[in-house]
Amino acid sequence: MTDPAERPVRNVTVLIGGDEMARIDEAAQGLGLSPDALMESAGAAVTELALAELATMTEPVTGPGGPLAAAPLTVVLCGPGSNGGDGFVTARRLASTGRAVTAVLVGDPARISGVAAAHNWAVLQAMASAGSLSLFVAPTPELLLKLRARLSPASLLVDALLGSGAAGPLREPISSAVDLLNAIVTHARAAGRPCRVLAIDTPTRIDLTDGTRSDPVVVADLTITFHRAKAGFAVDPEARRLAGRYFVAPIGIPLEAETAIVPPDGEFPPARMTQVNWQEPVVS
Image (tube, rainbow, N blue to C red; front, side, top):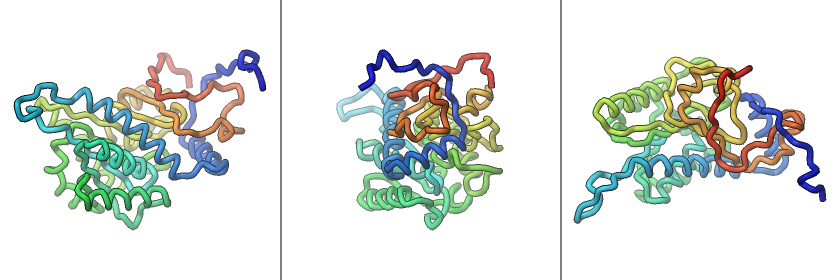
């Protein structure tokens, strides 16, 4: 066994884009890591950050009958892809801790992609039938806007609409979902009520490689990405502003999955959830 003290120092800064992350993810699955395992790990990391954020918004004052304010509501807006699957896991895990959760599939259930996302969608349906959480399907902008009154009380909005694989202009009903999310936050803050946005992987839709963004775009208070920090937020100050506090979480991807993608002398990915404090100036 090699003495850790004799191993070469790995200190080359590593920032990857969406394409590199997709290749690393594919390589990890080729090594035997299942999509279900990756999605579960991602959702667990999001849940950990969500619970920490919710703890800062809990009403500390209680009366004879309990808390004087209603428990914070978390709304998870999910697209039909893998990013939405991460949102399904997050909704399930938050509800399993007794949190008030409303999950919305912004799209057609028939368009849910991947076995892992479909499996977690089925679990959410079972939980909704048991009354553990509220679950809605909004495949059109009109149906989505009818949910506004149910979603407006949210203290935490989780953006699981689009992730690293998205490209091109926003399509409906995702575009309307972004507008609705931003409007809920604006009105809550105008009323003096705390309301924060947690984006999964990237705010919808900021490109992970170059930081370019859609119009409209989600304005997040905190963003959690997986495995490694993404280059788009390093090279674009506006992307960093829109992402808010930026966290990187490990999801169990082995270093072997990075072969021929990440420099062999590149720094190790974080071993635990880590907040990235970007340094200026950033050299692209």
